[in-house]
Length: 467
View (cartoon, rainbow, N blue to C red):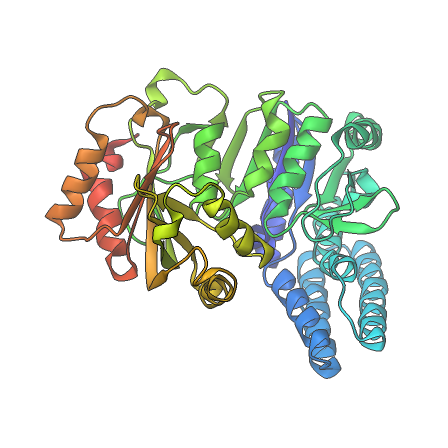
């Protein structure tokens, strides 16, 4: 098979992990054609973000210290991971060149006294540029041919929306296949940096946090891969967060559309746009563990088998949100009221996670992250209070509980089971939404009730028996 394997940062953060990944790649390469996509090593992206914050605060010393930490971490990994001295020496030499470039970039940003989205993308790209060097060196170290390539070098061309770019797929498809197909045919394993591409002027761009998944599916689509595997520290998509529900299970199979919903509601390991490149080709994807390679993980496919069509697949929760109840008599029957509210929030870059409006149109309730709550209330008060809004009521520390499963569509009694279960467990529900697709039923409870709600629903729908 032609496979694209994407490794998350937690899978490649110790010498032993990197050596195990290299051995697993060597084993798979005997019978498959492979392309590897890597995230930055754990904590590196966070350190790079902190460097940008330090530069904004004109704290050059802290930025340089963080850069030194990144350098030391990667040098130690290189020394402890790569056995052959010639390969190790070449890797350390490459690292030194990158660290000189990183320090020069910090100097330049401090000198200019500004951090632009474009310079931030260039800064953030260092994590993946470093990780592909060490993974490729580890593969060469055990006797396989490999080459490290950045997103720019492999041919991912994007728009110039720095920090949240989108690929220009027609150009990307031509360039990536031209770069990778000859390498894969010659049994050279390309190791590609995720999360990063370049615009048509050659400036480095990024896809946003979690964008390495997206890189993997873009590359899979370009080289006509038969499967794409997202390798991380989890066994697959789960029926619930195992930290909350001890007997939660790995879901053997889900549809693309269910996986998209799970990605939106707290299944952290998937970038929401990951599925876009797969839809036209209907390429299957697996979410697997790099530590437990015997487990086949979760298969994500366009048309799951009949046995996988459970009513409810999983219970997800997103904690630490705020609920804003917006009221006003003049809102009733006035066209454009909701548009004004959401445009005001959008202009302030506030993402609305959930919306509910009563039929009388006299109130709209929205949910935003706790971190956006003050900003949202301030902007609504400044712009709209006393005009179309008469009153704002705010509730902090709320959690969204979401039930996801395509089998809920047209199934009678799902809602009654959900709210019956909440009543039995004395959990008060503050707000409810369900889309017309009936793929997900979401409601809001107090943060303190999250665990009780998730456990109760997991039990009610017998999700521990899903396998």
